[in-house]
Amino acid sequence: MLVGVFENGNWASPLWTGTNSGTFDLSTPLTAGATIDFAVYGGFASGNTPLEATITAAVPEPATLALLGSALLGLGIVYLRRRGAKTMVRGLLAVASIASAESVRADVFNMGGTISGGTWTGNASLEFVTVGDPGNVPDTAVHSGVTGGCGSVGYTYQMGEYDVTTGQYVAFLNSVATKSDPYGLYSAGMATDLPTIHITQNGSAPNYSYSVTGSAPGVNNMPVFDVTWGDAARFCNWLQNGQPTSGTENTGTTEAGAYTLSGATSSVLLMSSTRNAGATYFIPSENELYKAAYYSGGGTNSAYYTFPTKSNNSPGNTLPDLGNNANYDLSNYTDPTNLLTPVGSFAESPGPYGTYDMGGDIFQWNEANISGSLRGLRGASWDNLSPMGLASSTRAAGAPSTENNYTGFRVASSVAIVPEPNSIALLIAGAVGMLAFAWRRRRQAA
Image 1: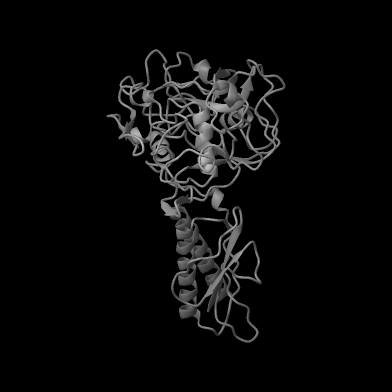
Image 2: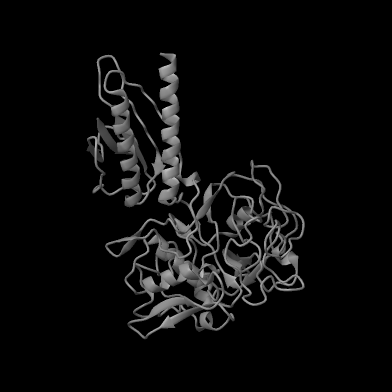
């Protein structure tokens, strides 16, 4: 039996080939956005064709490739033992998109969990959902400050399933702000502005470290707060640059990538920054954020919801969530002790594409340039006194250097994100089941 691994259907030049046992380790660099094909060939006999099991997927991290390869090797071995080389059956499994599989939410952001040459490989714990229906109609209802409608996006993209969390932001700080923090990615307010949720800076330059502290349950999974628009842009640059861990803020980590910042921290300079061509991780545009929150989907000529909980009715604010709820101040705070709630707490109130907390909990920055001096904000926060703050018709804004305890962000992306290995294992299990079914049908027919 021969096992082959191929990139982008280039069958003439395998990345790796092997025999009937063991795992493989790819030394050839993989192209971002490429597809990887695995082919398992049983023995050959005159007049018969080989068994193939092919899975096409977005490029996963190396450990996931090893897992998938091992499973396919095992499949080939089982096949040979059960069937021998007398009759070969050709079975082509359905092509499966890794981007559509679901993964388990991680409590602490670890960027995939492995480091190679000072750079994290993989993005498994920053989770995205796909926002499809490209070319959808805009929402032409009356909106404050918006002309020509809002929410039309001509391409498929990925939206962060959750707001960026305190644990995720601390991973960022510990990667780029340990030697110094010249651009103020850490704010002293992170340690004091909420009663039970804190991000603490420890030590002194050049040996800073950062940790999430506080007594709130799920404190690592609270949305990050006290971040400026510039902080959010630098976080995206860090993702764009492969999550380097040099401990410094420079052009290779935070100052270039999705946005060219070059040390900008003032509102005037931050207003001049726009998304660079080819950016793969970025602050959502207002249209991207609006569509993910309010467009009902299912086609390009669908309606828009009033609230980002898939509803036209005002949401409640209670937990446990029975549907159409969000964290805001409806006569009383959802959580009077902690104020914020962990991302995804309102599990029965997702947005149309599967995002959570796009209304309430924390305001979210977007790229909109409003009046030349403000950046867009949407979604409202734990401190909003009316459900209309969460509504599609409400457009907020702030100076891009502003930070406070009710403003955070989420990340959007132009690329499909690979799920964690558990999802891939489920995908393989399903593929094996399909193949077994095909064998049985073939055997009965014979």
